[in-house]
Image 1 (spheres, one colour):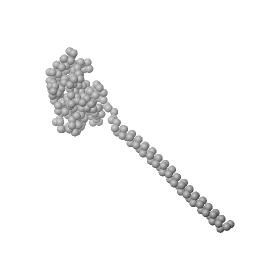
Image 2: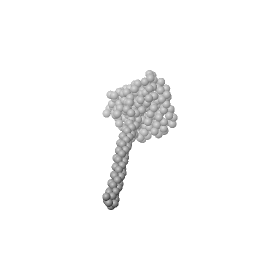
Image 3: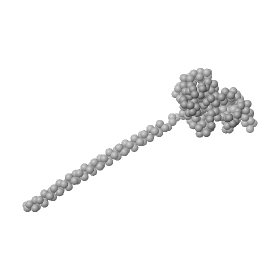
Image 4: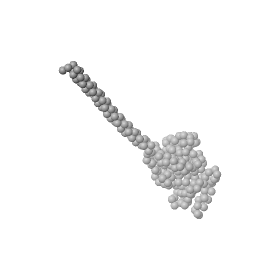
Length: 258
């Protein structure tokens, strides 16, 4: 074989070897890309699963627990606590906060008249509880007292306990009703109210979600403040609309005639 032929054959072998090396390099890059894509895919899937799990957790945390409605609550969404006979022609709707000084003033001035009209079957009362002062002054006394009142409703003793809470209302800045022990202590003034079930209801905040829903209804109604007092749907109480016990009796009498 001539020198020229040997050189040509060697060049061909070298070119073939070089091509094989290049092909190995391409194969290596392709495998790296495949593996990388697979890793990215797995990580992407993990991220999606993580996001779904996180969203699921957020949904659970944003969802309020079940609303425990007090026994005998009635009205729209069962947010009112009743007093009086269902057959009464007139309905007095009262929105109150147990920490509200103006609510105490109203109760002290009208308690006897309202209770008398209700007892005689001439007036049906619907009490709605709010937590306005907690929001304005801080603390939790409005919520805690409202929950305790709802617990008293479970025991069939809401009207008496409602009156006790207003008669013993602390000064507005004093969050004494934020202590369940104080609420249970005052419940001793209502015969037969303090039982193990009542105390558990108070301590557990059994009706907290219901109270929150009631306050939301107060906000949605865009009422100016507490107390808000409506007779047959008409606002009858406020600085521009002075009300007296005698006038309330007359309004009920007029409604009876109508």
